[in-house]
Length: 99
Image (cartoon, rainbow, N blue to C red; front, side):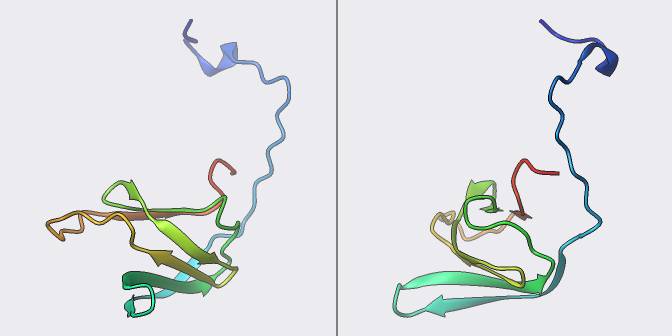
């Protein structure tokens, strides 16, 4: 069954909190970690929310491994790279599914 308009959808428990805090990215750098033998991305900024369970980083549409998430830093281990080495796009999501 599909709804025709949003008025037909009634929310019985709508617990939504909006915030004015928007994460600000100041810099990003890619480094090679010789101990793990993998490339890592570190994103620095302010206002980052969530943790490793509620944040995700996608490279070319593929989830990458989060090493650290704090309010000012995100470290990503590139664990699923494409073979041709072409980066078509990346997306960083904080607090997945939360407004």
